[in-house]
Image (cartoon, rainbow, N blue to C red; front, top):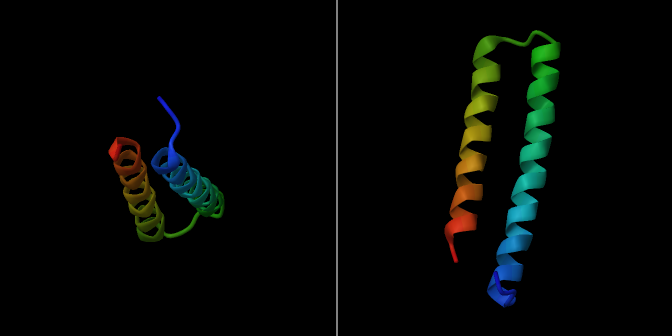
Length: 62
């Protein structure tokens, strides 16, 4: 893929989204390790799924 300003902008957005996802995954791991209430865990999983969808949208934007 040829780099241009749009691609660089999308790459920055993608990397930011992936870093946020990484934090959410670490939070989920902590929640499971702490034996948190299952509804709270499911809410976190839903947030992670939504963030992954956004990554897909960013990747297919070009």
